Image (cartoon, rainbow, N blue to C red; front, side, top):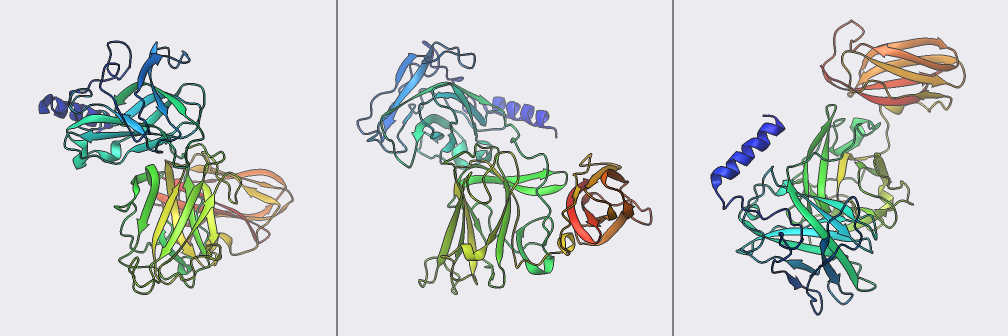
Length: 471
């Protein structure tokens, strides 16, 4: 079924279900006589709980030309999660989350950078946790997008009749009273994530020396959950050119559990994972990686033998956080100084200020490299990404030599087996290219999947690249 057909079917289902499934008073404009302006808003956990106000737009602009907005004053003495909520049954109306309405957008105007939270609740009090999205601009209007698609089908996603805002959700506390303006809240269909367009780098470590939780390059050990019941995140599968990865949305902290079969990493030297985020990564945004060992009894908080350690990364660390590019963490286990035992690893916890994270190649290794890097690297040659990628039926591989030498350019599968040699001859300095037609040495077409190109100059590896063949 196509996405459009699916959305139409969802709408028909809502219509057939009657007004109890779709009676939403939206968009919430806060204009005089419009939704939001005359609702009964209650303020909570905000010290003296000053009432929300309907005030003139503080900065009319092309993005927000409306005349009126809602203002919330987050008091310094209030709780970090101070907020306001509409009245059950009378304001928002009753509806059910679906593919047609699970993307919430709103405009926000703030003088500080902090999370904005949105939450829904039912008349009986049942509710999922709030979705938090940070603003990135100050003293100007900005649109924030809240993805509730991961909540569709949950018990708390039916018969919703209340919306709750957390305008200045800042666990670090406030340095003063902050006024936050919210305007033009809309509900729309599910949107695809702003994700990577190329796959993560191909792992170079020998599979016999790897314990993998997740990677197309290796067989994985059992993982009980990629989003534990105690975490605050949604996880789904994502794919680029046949390469699989995990997609975390609305992530405050994510728990990966492998408790039923703990991992013995005492022979391993490093922990590796690749991440990609569309979120801003400027200071003081952080991304944290924690490993937890449950001890010999394999039980959390049992026997006093649990150990853990967390590492934190930001835009100044090694590796640095960057937006819109793959970040490879290849971390010595010795850096996890509190992890004094590694024989019964049971949890990986991801947290920090990144709400959207794509994850690939999660594994432990002992430093032994495979087919990609068995020889010292040549410093005078460069292998460029193939184009097109993904490809069918052929692709071009470009490479550049600073000095002349004997070049060997070959294609391998992910098991390290040679598929085809494209170049094996003396080559002059400068730029060159070769074409792979998706065939092996015997002229047999290769199956769809991931392949590696490897460039050697005078017997030394100059580079490897991952390619995706689609039949």
